[in-house]
Structures are given as structure tokens and as C-alpha cells.
Length: 270
Image 1 (cartoon, helix red, strand yellow):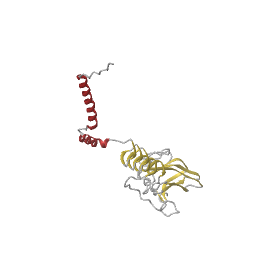
Image 2 (image 1 turned 60 degrees about the horizontal axis):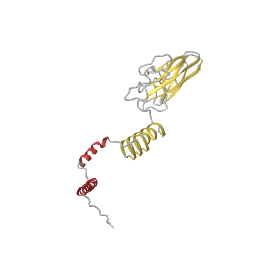
Image 3 (image 1 turned 180 degrees about the horizontal axis):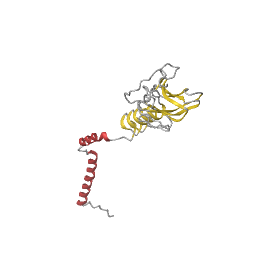
Image 4 (image 1 turned 135 degrees about the vertical axis):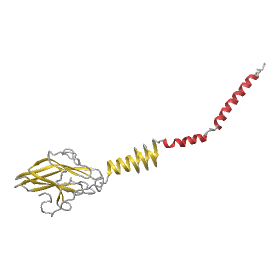
């Protein structure tokens, strides 16, 4: 029986196989042992770019300029959405924030669980309201008044324009520099109380009076004033309208009220 003889591989085939093995083995070694030669340059670049980088999603952001989405953001300039933003300049939802849409405690908040009222009206802020005085006079010179009470008191008494209470503008009267508004849009310059009558009848005299400490014409207190009128003659006397007061923004000079004894006509009304 004939035996099958195997031919030895040719020298060329052997050389090719050895070469292929070296190439594949060298690639594997290179892939597993190679090192980046410019590691220091990469570290320097990362440190340089770090201040400009932002994190859009994070579980915790202790201190961040912008924390768009974070479970907790202790301190952040802007924290749009955060389960807890303890302190943030601006935050949509925050426990404590200077400005916040929804906040437990906030200086300014659109919707807040607790937003404490200011002790006094903040500087430069305006509050408005209405007033009405009406009575049946039996003769000329009879008088009545209607209260103007500020929801938030002022830090100091506002001016009513001086002698004659020019800030008490009769129906159809022209606005002034200190009272540039109207009965439908009451306005007041800082440190002024402006009263805009929308309807007057049987009124011969008007003034604003301070009733907090003494009954005096041409003055107001930090808590409010009275709109005082006198009748022209017998009949129904009416004055009604709106008012605005703006908290002073600096040192303002006020006219000195002329005081009189309570129970008599206020000084300046004769």
C-alpha cells in the first residue's frame, strides 16, 4: 500500500507566515503598551479651558455659575431646574433666592409659599388706591374728609407739594412735574403723595391733611393722609378719585406742616 507523502512548505511560504505573525503581534503589543507622549500639554489645555466649560446635567452642583439641571445646587448664579437650590441669585425653583418664580423664601418671587411683606415701602416704589368724600351740606363752608391709608407705610412722610396742597389735583386739573399722572393712571414723583380727583361737586376748598400726629393742612404722614374739602353752599358735596405715593429715593425736603388743635378746622383751611 502506497503511503501519502506530505510536501514541506516552500521557503517563501514560511517567510510569509513568520512576517504575518510578527506584524500582528507587534500591533497588539503597541496597542496595549503605547503611551501618549504629550500628557503635560493635554493637562495644561484642560486647565485652560476649564473655566469656560459647563455642566448641563449634574446630581450635585455645590458652586456653579450655571446649573441648568441639578438635584442639588447649594450656590449658583442661575439654577433653572433644581430639586434643591439652597442659595441662588436667580432660580426657577429654590428654597432661598434673590429672584425666583417659585420659592419658599425669596426677595422677589412670582409665586412663593412664604414671601414676607416689607416693613416699609421700598425706596422708589409706588403704591396706589382710591378715596371718596361725600356729605350733605346745609350751608357754605361745611367740611368733611376721607381717609387715604397706605398699605405699606413709608420710611418718612411724603410731600403734598407745599402750601395749598398742589398735589391734590381737582377734576379736570392739569398734571404737575411731581404728579405727572391722571385719575385713570395715578403717578407720583419719589417722595410725593398725589391725589387725582375724577369728580367734584359743591367743593370750594380742598387740601391734604396730616392726621397722624396733628390735624394740619398741606401735609401727610408716613401712614397716609386725609382728603379734606369744604362746601360751596347747601347741597351734596362730593370729591372722589385716585391717589399714588412713591417712597423717597434720597434726602428730600418737605414743607413744614402748620399744626392746629384737633377738633377745629385744620390750619390753612380758613
